[in-house]
Length: 270
Image (cartoon, rainbow, N blue to C red; front, side, top):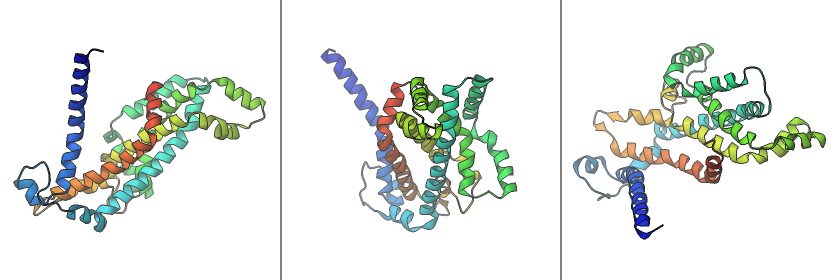
């Protein structure tokens, strides 16, 4: 690579990083300002730095409970999605049966469907069975979208494991549960990490179902953030602080599964 080409690529990389990081920086910048400073002046850093916006979130139950509720139903959904998808993906990877390709395609079509399509059926069903405004209601509704994605990702990783490993384990006297837990799952741990990451991220950022199926007891942070308008106007500082704190869980998850995501890209399933 010549020096001119290297400079062009370096300039493009710097421009991309600035474009990607600037909104995050500006949100952090706003979270450390008062509302008066936000709406009256334009500055690249706080003139009167304040932590009051973060204090509101950590002391006001209507704010911090939103994070707790979101983490609860996201955790439930991630565990259920991976648990359900593992045997399903193994079946698609190892066996051939009538209609297997059609079923696999049908699963993916559920992932392609907008959440608004399922909103009314979920609302009526959960109202009838008494699941409205519960963490389980949101977690189960997100399964419709996360399970197809999880099956698709895991099937790709499982297909990369030679079938001879299964046959050798059975010859050595392993039962299927023991083989699956002790041998097979460690071989696809990268796929499980990638799957858990994508399930977590979709459930964490999804707004429509989470907002409609909850009201008080299980209201997520994304719903709380849409209700910051008061008689005094929009509370920009608190909203920015909430946005900063909303990014933190996703960033932590990305940090722990960053190596698995790279393997997922290498295998062509992400």
